[in-house]
Length: 344
Image (cartoon, rainbow, N blue to C red):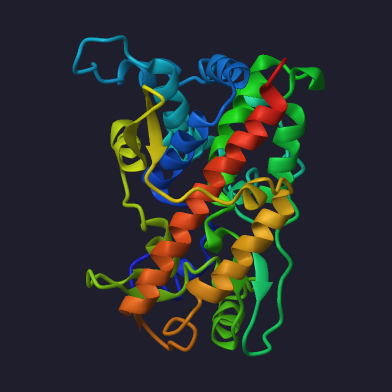
């Protein structure tokens, strides 16, 4: 999600800076849960160790529910999954909000792309997305921010192996950001912004740069549930909003006996090996951009002059596309972690 607003947002809220947290809690934690099942033993051990260094680890660990049969709690798994939401949590923490003034926390600031670990108290909202621009009416396009989800995924991935020489504090920070950003870039509206003549006029009247619709935040829709919400919020909420780790795990898996052993089997179709093996984050964003063009901005959204009333076909297609994307994100996240943390 970026900043989301009610139906009356258009002029005033248009020009607030974007924040982002794709899929909300449930989607992010389901991606991490799927990835955790796919980690190699060595990568899982190191990922667990690094997760324990997060400042919120003790709080997460204390929230792990007791097991019904009295067996030991799976704290490592629970906290790894919970860590996937930390990059959104910081937006509500006072110390981060106090540090993140518009002058200090902007994609044009010299510190925008820094990688200094948990001493960094900036929120870095622009790390959550890369807006690949498009227009259907010939409106001028603006380039994506120079520091964005793509630049940070590349940097964090390169810094995560022990051989990169970074401190464990930095490596832990990078890991929890990657847990989140892999989910972000598979949310289609974190990969695009639509530019229109109508929006351009509003920006001109306000005397501010044209940012397009900011990933669908400045388009409103009405789904079958009847509320009127930003398009971006609709896609973020396709898996629900707030969730517990236990809820995300329950929604993600069924337990089946495989060779006499109980295993967690994803409720979603797994991606093809070929698609899961795509390792270039630039291609991930291009895929998400194309999905946004095909499904997020499909009719009735594309032609709507006000609130777009979503029909059954739109909502069915959106749900199917979203499920494919989070399943794919889980597999690719596991691949990234295995590649950099295994056999260290």
